Every structure is written in C-alpha cells, then in structure tokens.
Length: 66
Image 1 (tube, rainbow, N blue to C red):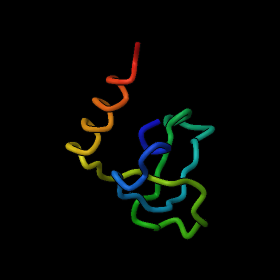
Image 2: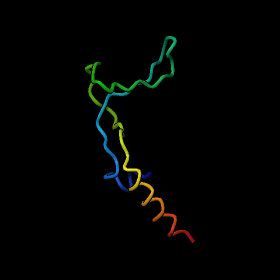
Image 3: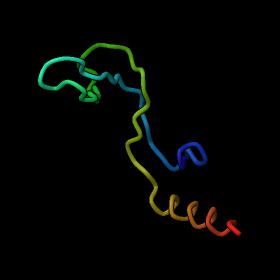
Image 4: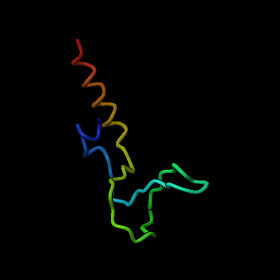
C-alpha cells in the first residue's frame, strides 16, 4: 500500500518472475534478479525503502484516524 501512496520512497526495477510447477522446487517463486534467463520482465521488484519517509507517511496516516 505504501508504494501505491508514495512510490518515491522506493527504488525498484523490472525483473522476470515465475513459479516452479514441477520438481523439488515446486511452488517456489523464482526472481531472476541478474537477468540470466533472458526472459522478458513481467514484475516490478521493490529493492530499497526510505525508512524515515515511510514512518513519516505512516504517522501522517495514523494521525487522520478518528
């Protein structure tokens, strides 16, 4: 939710993600962080967060609650 409200608090990049459907890794979500598969990106990976900005946003949102 924070990314939707304040995407500037995050760094991100596009990566390819898939779910293994067979073998011992069945059900595992695999993120190709180093672009080794050659598959086109299909997801956005959030990598870092401005923690001070996040907690300021959280405090601001909580202050508006009744």
